[in-house]
Image (cartoon, rainbow, N blue to C red; front, side):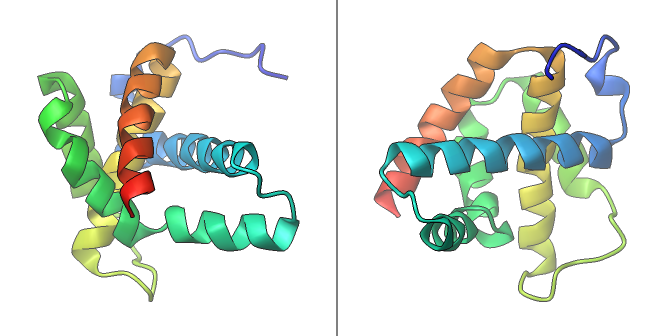
Length: 133
């Protein structure tokens, strides 16, 4: 299932393509985290996931980890933040949505780059932030 690996340079992909992958990786991470915390009923899992996978919170998460990013990572996040998707969800402000896209772009970039250790470092930091929320 996961044997197909991206072999190109993820920095060459469009920002929204990186965000598309990053959204899935982040959502899977959050869902796994919730199950590890003891949420097992689907309705509860969904409610808790929605609290954590939304533009407002993801924007705050990016703001909280920006000072820990390398120059290259920050440039990727900014590329994602500045990407024009053509729509903004009705429950999000434009700036929040763009910052959340920046976080997803960064996660997608690191995932496709195969830098799983770095994803784990950043998501561990995000875990601590989520625990404080």
